[in-house]
Image (tube, rainbow over all chains, first blue to last red):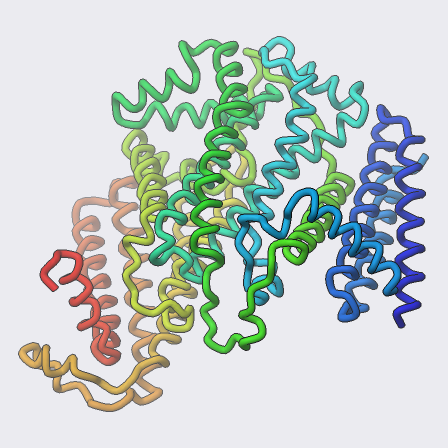
Amino acid sequence: MARGIEVALVILLLVQIIMTVLIWTLNPILVSHQTLAAGYIASSLIILSLVTYVYYRGEEYDQEWIAAGIGMIVLIMSLVYLKGGVV
Amino acid sequence: MSGRKNIINRFTEWLDENFGFTKTILRPAPEYSLRNPSYWLGAIAVIAFFMAGIAGIILLQYYEPHPDTAWESVSRIVTEVPFGNLIRNIHIYSAFSMIFIAFLHFMRNYFVVAYRRPRELMWIVGMLMGLVTLLMGFTGYLLPWYALSYAAVGFGITIIKHLPQPLSGFLEYVVSGYGTDVELLRRFFTFHTVLLPAVLIILLAVKLHIFEVHGITEPLSKDIPEEEKKLIPWFPNIFLYFVILVCVYVASILTASIIYPFGIHEKYTPGVVTIPMPEWYFMWTYAIAKTEFIEVLGETGFKFFIATLTVITLVFIFLPFIDRWKDKHPSQRPFFIAIGVWITVQIILMTYLAWVTAGSYIPSDIAILSIVIPTIIIFLAAYIYRLKLVKPPQLVWEKFSKLKITMLEKKSPHPKEYVWASVKFLLTIMCAGLSFRIIYGSLSESLGFGWLIFGLVLLAFSTIESFKVIYVADLRVGNVERRLRSFERWFGIG
């Protein structure tokens, strides 16, 4: 189980790094790109809160919260897509 | 896992060595508070304040506080400044969430009676912070120089003009100077960006100090396990909890900006005519002011509106000195809970009414119904609940034997009595509502003097009857004695 969460966190951190890098490639004047940036930043913050949560709770973390966090990221990015925040 | 934790642990220890977080003066918190985010609503409101502040400082670099250029500068922020639209949305949503969370914090502390000794001043400082927050919202609304916000601010200034002199003249000068638009905008800008934030920070420092002295309010439940009462150090535990809260909060603000980004409204120019529409958090006050009843009464009605707002504000500011009820648990204070629920319901209802009747008055019948129906439902529910709390009569009989109350049965009432008392209470409240309608009709629609007298008699009768119903219930539970003793204490004769 511990191995599984380690892998999940590493993947999430990689996603966070990719999103952070992508923000720098956006055109900050375009409103659609700003929406995309908001989605990236919000998702990165959710990942940071998940990592902090696992560290905070140690071995006693609830998988439901991790699943809820990942679901939140998917929801945010879907909203970005629906609101036209795509390059 | 352990290797990763060791690296993080080493990093944490290194940070602690440098900053001395574990030696912080911030007080440890009990574990149960970390299991319930409602304990941290005030902290989230502070986070919202700082977030709005940071976004606001960025906006300040591009905003021009002059009637000729304010709207254009906001338009430029949205269309030309890098991430300008996003930063503006973050500023607005942070401000809105600050007001909303502050309201939740206020209601939560009301329901859990967090204003009792020794936290009276903490409550008063919190209430002042709430008022300053609303003023920040009010002053910030004008800055984009929309026709909509100009009309709403004009309504606010009308309220100031109806205050008694010399307060009215002084406040009018402070807010709008000699009445030119340039002065008005510049003063609102100064209030919004300098004066009110400074006052808020000072009040925050005072509140934080009181919080650190007394700590988190004790829970009302007596069944908290001992292990949940143990104190948790501020660093790293509460600090990490805060990191999670901040991340989730900021992510929520950004998500709101994605779902519903704010646009730009029409610019104010002297010829433009628009409906005064305040922001959502002032809608309920606006609803009261534009009720037909208030309008018909004219100047007197407007003064009544201002007096109502003043009384509500003062009652809540000085609530710690007004609420002398012995019990703290919500189950033992059904009427205080009912008042809190009633206020929340009324604010929501009034906001909705103001929204749907934009541009016209709220008819008196609808206004009266929207007040009377929730009042009946909520207070009747509280009353029935309270009757269930009835205990056998106690010492109160001996003290009030002269009033012949010994005739009442010395046992718990029969369930039928609950129903009968509830029906009586409901009827009296309905009579009171009807009497208000008759009095109003006789004043505004010239129904005649006879109807006025009838309405007043009906009002007196229903008031006496409703108090009688409550009085009998009070006698049964021994509250009369408790209340009289409370009055005795108030007047210093107890």
